[in-house]
Length: 487
Image (cartoon, rainbow, N blue to C red; front, side, top):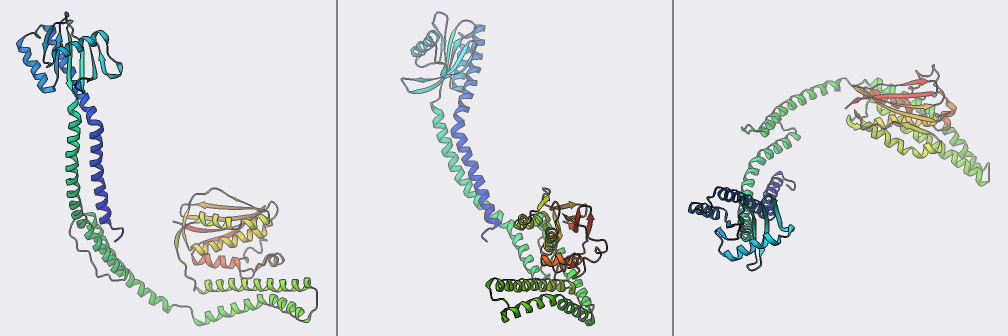
């Protein structure tokens, strides 16, 4: 498998281990020396406290304190030099005593560069220095003890770079071994984890083909085992449900509408088609005969005759398509695909597609900035319902020429309404506008090519989804609305 969980698990684990080791190497290279210097600084402060206490108590010249100085040297790798107020040596563990005395006196009388100072306190100063002769870096503390003696404490730093390099090499070796061991370990663990998942995948594949005999057999108590047991229960439930559905389907087949009802609907369909097509057919026939007999020989008249024929043919084609759609809905042959979709996006997309027509008719559309609102329904059929409402609003918009679209989310449903300014629908026509071929204003309907079928299609679609629809008259216009269940 290209996107196998096993591969992803191994890759992520290796990247984590490698990243951790690289981070440790980076921290070791950049921070270890600073950490070492800070520890040395603290060791110098401790040594200073011990020497200062001994000098104040007068014990610094004793042989017993020589042992303490030796401990400081051995434990912290710190060499000590103490001079009295006459610059005579009191105590020292320095190898090159003369150079140390000279260096201390030079610091006292001439001072040091502030750039190299790490810490300055009452009585002492800690700094990083470089021995020009040896080309070696030291951290040293120098100053005056409470009894007036001068002192200098020094510790070499040259060993830290070598320590860092050795530490990095050791960590690199250990890291390589850890990565290899981790790869082997994670492969074994991933096999153990992905094996039951692949077993579940095989079971689901068999269930897809309605084979419910496959069962998950794992006996561990992990989340995967819980999932497997749930799949087993789901398989049993699906098998029972499918059996019940097949039984119900057989019962439904017995309750199909009787032949006489189908024949009646067909007769009604043919009657409606023949009635609505008589006028356009007569117009087409008349203008076609006029063209054949050459009633008008000028090109402009012939073009007008042809435009009338084409226009009527387009209207007939649109009417027949709508009648076929309505017929399918009324016969129950159209499958309603219930799905979850964003009604706000559907409405906005259709309004955007009608922008040219709106500009031609100088109509303004109002709609609040609704967020995503998800509903259940047949998305294509819902779009056809909104299209019928919005198209009617465009054709009948008068006065201020405003179309107001609202999407109101209630607790259990969403209500979509399309309002247009203009004349109200007569009260005696409201009950009939959902009927096939009913036209409130026949002249205007004829003008824009309406067939009187659009609202019948709306009615059939909404009833097929068991949803509500309607129309409301306002003082300044009309609003058509429909509802959909909330997702």
